Length: 152
Image (cartoon, rainbow, N blue to C red; front, side):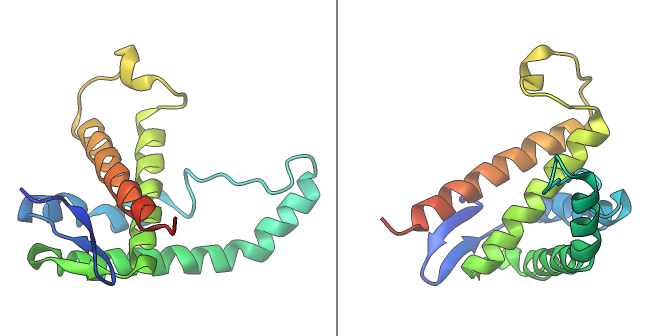
């Protein structure tokens, strides 16, 4: 099997097998079902709840729109990934955000709320746990490729 993500002229090459596409295809819909920013709490003003609420109100539409755009990019490029597709850096960053969001949502659904969970043995093996590990592997591979593309 080839590397899923690899540096390429013009960006990042993405190549997925049919089973990988089948595993990843439901992710955007699953994230949508989880709700807007379900596992992505952000507090810009942790010491000012009123200011933070106002910021969240003002930015909610823009954040939702950006999230939907990322999901659309993943869905569109996923359809072409079996033959290999070169993602622009922006598209690769969309993949990075969606993979990160998916990991956070899955971890929240599995009840993971602290570091070190991989070693504590407290989680029962499940398809969602396997998916979480797989997404972590994909995410790490994409981070490595994007890091290598950064200027020296």
